Image (cartoon, rainbow, N blue to C red; front, side, top):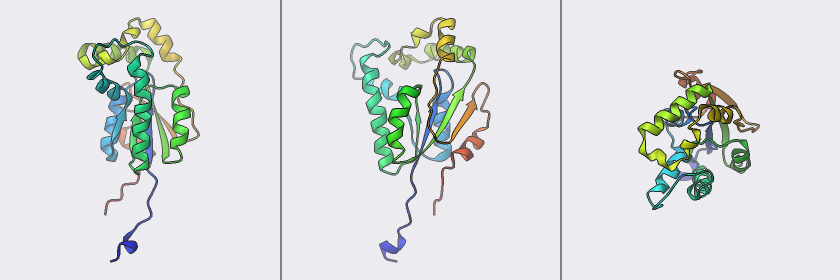
Length: 195
């Protein structure tokens, strides 16, 4: 069969945006969704953690040098993958003012779906404290600014989620996932047709 006859109409990739405040369970859900779908997960925190290896002396702080370098790297990787036709899961604790202006151009390249992770402030605070104790790579982040439960709760409650006119789903990550993982994957409507 000639190549031209075998060409199938190409679908647009899907960009699955997993968002929510720190400690909401985004990274875990993003990796689980990527495995279920069969695509890469690009996580903002993991990019910054990788930069620490070449940064020399580094102290995390709000708006630090690595944070500023991470932002264009994160969105550049997303654009590169989407232009190549790769369905991708993107995860970050960005609020609307950071997500929306950078996602709008990517809407030209992909169908966007947003998954908002939600959990109560107390659970999120406990998760942040636990990962600080468990993971030395967290030194890349300014998690220490969440040392006070009241300060964290105010930040958590004031989180402004991404506002785009695209399909969106809220997922409670308090104990497992509500809705369940298979329901979230079904909502994403990522076609998997492998011949």
